[in-house]
Length: 305
Image (cartoon, rainbow, N blue to C red):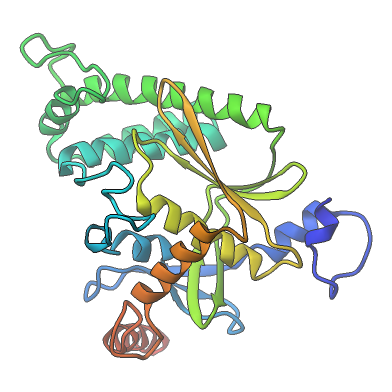
């Protein structure tokens, strides 16, 4: 029942879905200063903190230094190396298109894909990297190209794979009887003294409330687990009952479902790893160090003048 998640300070009555949408939304503007690799969000309300993108913090954790028996070690998760940069660019675009296709429409996804491909400086190299990978889509060999323009080859391959991924996600969601509550809604808050800025792919519900993340990759990566758990905790901060989380790791062949329960050891481990990397605001270590806070403060001061 959605009513179980609504805090007591809200009036009892109908419209639980609309109440939750209001509770789990933060109006904020994004900033990306040149002096730092992190983007941050500035809420309209001073009740909420200025916060760095939690997704970006999860990505810069050095998972390679974790012990082999650590549940988030790359070696323990059969992920010994990072994706090559060019293949990673292909995977990123495919993921963006898959998200758009799952949340919006085919035309919207096509527009996003065209925009992403237009920004590529090296489409031929990206095509070659994707075609050379055994687990990547089977792009036509360069000796016999599908077209004289590599962006056309990439457009067809990415859209075909994104469509297959989306179909698999929808089949799983129907099997779990998941219904949509919100899609890609920004939420900014503080959890355990750490400012968080999260934008889950979706928040859905069945018997329970679920924060869901779609990952259009061939393997589930440690940062996917950390990112999703941070999103789940940010949502939990606003609710009367802890939500669950689902990671849908999808490719054209299948959809793997990873369930993150609120009281699981894996969730606790992921959160502690994130907290360590984020650091205490104003401290000497972590992302939220004194230097970053100074850059953010200077940026906001200049905007007020």
